[in-house]
Length: 178
Image 1 (tube, rainbow, N blue to C red):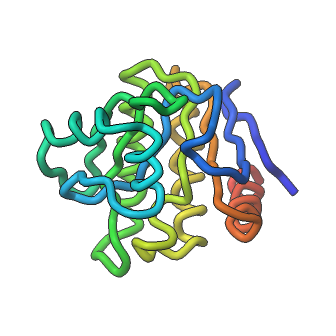
Image 2: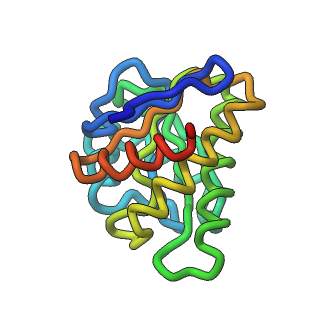
């Protein structure tokens, strides 16, 4: 199955792993809550592994609305930055368009900060109820379209939790490259 593809000399890559453990990435994406507090799952990992500096930076921003992206330092994480992306929730009106806009806003922030390699999770899948198929289709297509015109990032990694998520993303990566 397809695990990577080139877009205008840049790379989209799929992998299985735990996003906070990634090495050689400039930034990781966290699917954030509107109040920007670090919740459960990846939020707990960011809070624990990244240390208190991350939440302290987030407190300066207060709240965000859907499609907003707030960039903080990575604290003690291997990644230098965290891109806190407030995406849509399950059955939210226009959720696919909002997910696409959120993905584009993450990529714009990465470009503004000149990040060369960033890692996304399966955006909104899991706790926030975005169907995995929708997450894969929308975010991969958005990444492909963005990379066609952008200077940075040079590589977009989708760091997926397990083989089930990987297979869905592989299927959609193949479709967008046809």
